[in-house]
Length: 545
Ligand code: N01
Image (tube, rainbow, N blue to C red):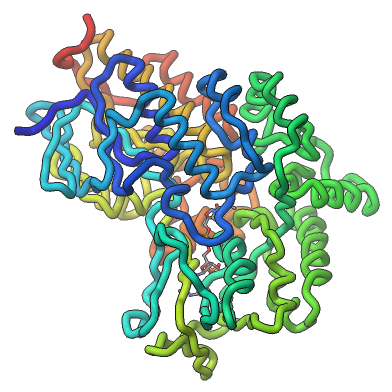
């Protein structure tokens, strides 16, 4: 017997938790399936040493309930993985959401049944379920990218991926450890692994720009100040910021309008120094021309390059660690003692930029003609971001069309939420949305509020299904592309533009028009009666009259 729900939600990360809360509040019967044994998504799986958020805790949190905002106490300026996990557990239990969640259950396939206009969802426990709506809260960075390095399977010791870290502590003491990759995950893990291991060898293909996070215990007066004015802070974060955060030196700082090339070198440097001292992602709030003009971007890039050189003792190692592409176009990395780690005697850096790793041997890694012996390997090699979690599932829409075929040329969505031929199938916090450059919890709250309105509209108007129009998908792809091409983002290879996955098109992957503009798009759709969507008639069983 198949269980029937109004909505099936896939994934209990930050978006899935809010989806259960919100859709239940609207009176829908729901079921959430989650592969892990509890909630938290990215903060459930990423247990590698040093995993920590790089948007301030006061800002990287739900805004939907003021009671929740007031009750929860953050202990650090930037919460670590364990505290973030506790936060998501707390939210889940505070609103009694767990009773609609089934853990240790992976969704293997979802198929649209045209006769009943329902989704049939198969799960790893062998069961199948039916639902009018599918809400995919499967995550932006949740499908680990495990590169095909020859010989990897032959390695004798354990191989870890940062995005699938074991629950038990991994003890590297006395070991020779190899880390492959130098993105945000590696930069957080490397100093802690180095402090424990006998020797650490880092294999670097491309250096990143890392800036100090400057984490410390949460100042009580700051927490108090934000809580006293949370609505105002949230408004600023949402509508007056680049990425959904506004705090610089614990004050909300508005977006700048002055251009880098219009001020003196001294004034520019003083601003960069101020942001640098504030720590973390404050360097995103600088002159807007750094995003669009290479010369302006160079002023900031060179500032950070100088800082990197000053932190590394050996000039040859410093040179290898210094990037030469535009800054901020690849996610800025926030570090704690990353560059200083290369001043340790037990750490070596291997440049694999000119020649890829030749092979993994049973005893280590062979690169540049030399074998580096390792007892354990850490793949900090990132994700098939934005699309991977969905393309790795077997999803079939109208007419038996697979999502992987629909996306074969490029990932097509309208407003980053719906696809043509996939009725009542909502994608949250993933491809075609601002989530990659914006505080993702905000984006998911906004999107899910829109999904709720949309479902209410269908019920109120006796409509059965909604899906994107193919023309609207095309137009959205063009809109995403227009915003992307107006910046320096396409000049840099990163997961933002799909460059880390062979054959992935950047078109339509991310929306860079800003959160305010993004909201305007989808609220206009609602106000104008969903012109970018096809709606079909028919009453949903059990819908309120
Ligand atoms: O992944 P990445 P990540 N051989 O894709 C290298 C968020 N995040 O997990 O640059 C050798 O950035 C690859 O090299 P290259 C954040 O948004 C946030 O670190 O492609 N190397 C690169 O160095 C971040 O951007 C936080 O040349 C290979 C690395 O692996 C996103 O997650 C913490 C390779 C992958 O870097 C992803 O970060 C952690 C190969 N075959 C993550 N394949 C915070 O909140 C890949 N690489 C702080």
